[in-house]
Length: 223
Image 1 (cartoon, rainbow, N blue to C red):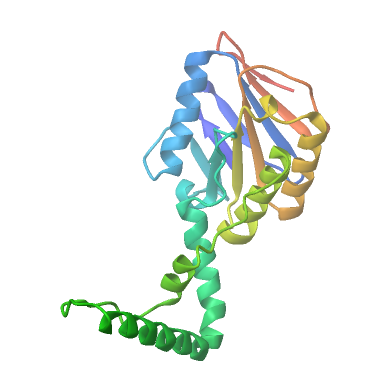
Image 2: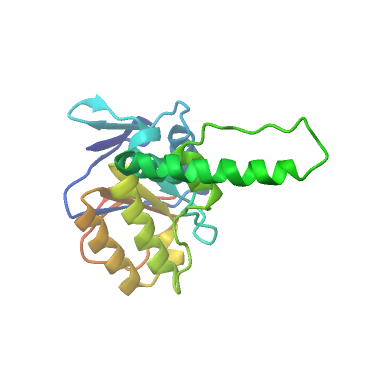
């Protein structure tokens, strides 16, 4: 997989078990680069190209991006939709239990309605698995003692539910220690997807990283 941005003469080939750190020192270039990536993960067009075997990848499908780690949400719409989809596949094997559950629900609602003074109450008789999951607030457990544990779970969701090819973390080194990052890198390698860090300046170098720097004068340096 290769990331290309012609404006900065940037070409990043991703390699297995290698974390790419892209340092962008110029604030204007930094905000434009991150903004371009965010737009593309939301389905809009952009200037940064991500390809595999000379074919462009679908940013919305193949890339996950985290900018705000304090509010990192493990239960965003994309994750919940993927979770429900996987659960529905397994639920099809026990559809008879869903029908029993629906019948019990209808019986309870009918009993309640009979005790009311209104005669114009209706409800949905066709209850799907999604309705049941929502009724029971099925979601990913997001209570963790440390941010590092939460990030690792996020990586697991990216792999097992979303099946992404690239995870991009913006300014993650402001939030995690070197020890935490080493564990995150291990998990990314275990889950078999690529990891891109975008940072505003150089920090401690960690084994396994490949460094690309767009300095304050917009010159490209590769380490």
